[in-house]
Amino acid sequence: MTETAPARKIAFATFVRRALDDARAMRAWTGSEVSRRTGVSRQTINRWIRGDWASDPEVERVAAFCEGLGLNPSTAFAALGWDRTATPRGGASTPPMDPDVEALLRRLVDPAVSDAEKFHIRETIRYLAYRPTLPVDVRNGEEQAG
Image (cartoon, one colour):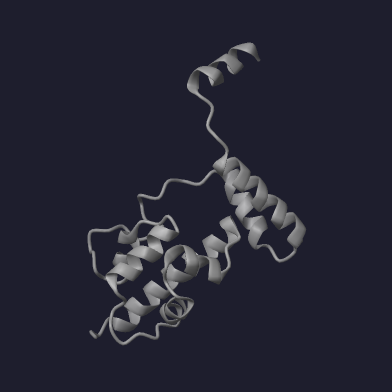
């Protein structure tokens, strides 16, 4: 490993932690569910978070982890120092987030908000995220009728 190995381990561990936190907050996935959907064992994910690896993680596993969570693998590769042209998470290419979405995310991580309310927020988000999109002509007709 190189002199920058500790920094790379920290950057990758931070990336993995954020990805897991997002999966928990937005999809209510457990660690087991993340493991099932990505094909990466919980033990491997935990080693990545602890920075407990002597050689670089396998490219295929990192890619599978990212793809299972709907993330761009180049962000993980950048954290590992593999792709210097990639923009790290939170960089200039990240679009601004809607203030209402930010407010919902804050409520989901707020310890003062009840689990029941968090459940309802997640269910509503899931409903909106996965509902079928109306055809353009139907949407236009609704606007004209309203």
